[in-house]
Length: 174
Image 1 (cartoon, rainbow, N blue to C red):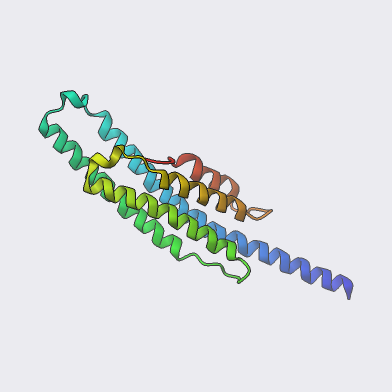
Image 2 (image 1 turned 135 degrees about the vertical axis):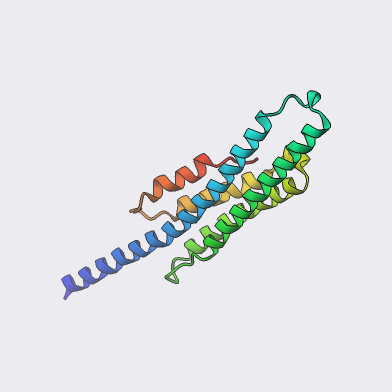
């Protein structure tokens, strides 16, 4: 009887661990999509800015063209982040005691919202590009901490490395 109980409990623990990994895989996949959008914005911004002569030497037309390109790139990245946020909202804890999964989702949604707000400002007025963005750094840190704390002791699907890649590749602000 004791052996059977131990086997059942071990099976339940293994099933719980598997479900937790599946839940986190969904979160990490959505976070990767968001990080890709942010990385794309950074690459576009850098490309646009590197093509410019110094501000002193820009003609009014060059400034307008640059602003138009920045607006378009910021709007495109905003749409990509909106799609990533939708995918993230779909991820829910499958088991009631996996509340940490919902916490991770909410922290990463906060981070996506900080980026989305930033990109909307740039899309409206590219001169805001030089403004500091402490909210992005703060939400990035909170999301990274939540993700790392939620990783199960046995992380499947390369979750450890994937979480690190999301936060290593993503700029803290921009």
